[in-house]
Length: 106
Image 1 (cartoon, one colour):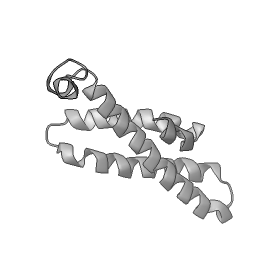
Image 2 (image 1 turned 90 degrees about the horizontal axis):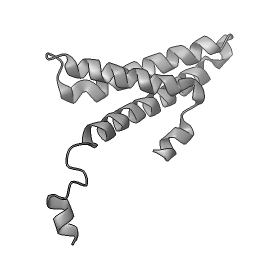
Image 3 (image 1 turned 30 degrees about the vertical axis):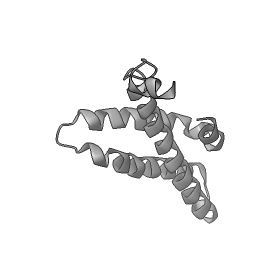
C-alpha cells in the first residue's frame, strides 16, 4: 500500500475515493457485470485525471505532459481504489479466523 501512495500526487488523492465510490455504485447496478467494473473504473480514472491535469496547464505546450500525468495518475488511483475495495471486502471474510489456512501453517 505504501508503494502505490508514494507515486500518487496529493492533488489526485481524492480521485481514488471517488473511484471507490463509483465502483460501489457500479456493483449495486444489477445489469452491470462485475467483471467489467475495474475496466470501467480505469477508463473513468484516466478521463478524470486527464481532465484535472489539463485544467491546471494554461498553455498548449504542456498538454502532452498533462495527458501523460493524467494517464499515469488515473491508473494509479484506480489501482488504489480497487485495492481498497479488496482489502475492505476481505477484512471480515475468514481472515485470521482460525479456519483452513491457519491449520495448514501448523
